[in-house]
Length: 143
Image (cartoon, rainbow, N blue to C red):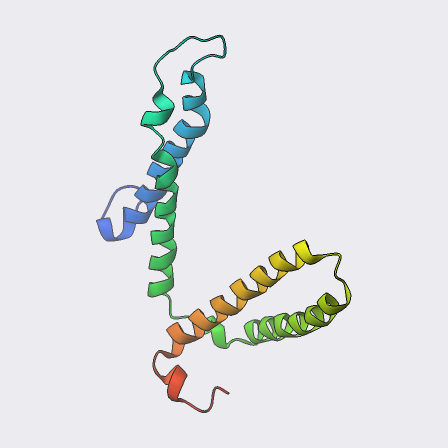
């Protein structure tokens, strides 16, 4: 039986991480601004510098994502909907490459579109390597 914040640490550690990060974010966003020195020149205590590390605590959520990634079997990577999604992304990428050659006035937008497509392709590659392990590189049935 699992509970939200009580029980075996293997099951609740991520709930505690979320809870602590939520409290730290509330302190950072709602409490610390009230302790800032006023504009009139009052030099009160500068708690913002003391709690500046709170923003770094938000990065701890990466551990949760990595944990979920490592524990998952990634069976859905072989599903029809995922294959169709990746096929659509590849098709859109090919079309966008052609459009990019014709429209030079949107150069700043193309950078972000390319980064998004790179993120999707990297995610797909990571999922497939996680799912098939070493056979991903040696099996000829995947290509």
